[in-house]
Length: 252
Image (cartoon, rainbow, N blue to C red; front, side, top):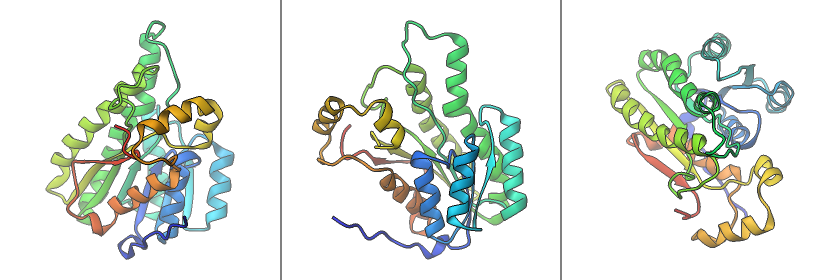
């Protein structure tokens, strides 16, 4: 089956900031916005992958190196993006890591690091870009959630807790920013077949068991998450805010 995806004229020339854009779902989001002829700035820790992606996609796509666990580094990176391509009216808080960990061995230090990796940077990214959106008269913020906690998935309690909190962040910021016509939504991926997932956890048995829980029989590629993100960023979604948009093939 060959899919023919939509083009959104409202995204042309928009400035979009994306976290964790060098690989996985984030890479597909960068590619999707570039295809919409948006100006795309993304941050990531992987210098080589970031440079390669930006070079491949052309002058409308730029990157900055950033450790999102360091809030000052995040603010500085977004400031550099703004200097180069202007203030963002679309923000995609994508960066996260779903490393497995045992509840028995979890330390306070590791818990705090997981929260910084998977949740805290989203708020400070919003804080950094929202003034520009207010000045522009509106914007769209998309936070990346996870269906792991909806499914009561085990093996990563600090990750699942952080991802559950993303929904609270979305709801409260949608209320606080709504008067400025800034929309805030959560995209909720299921098990997405990124290279990382295929390398670390997508065994034949695990995939077989997972597909049985889905309503649809196909594995989910990252491009489908990116398609939901670009829709929510577009004017077609002008009345969509404070909600969850699932891309999980009916697995909850």
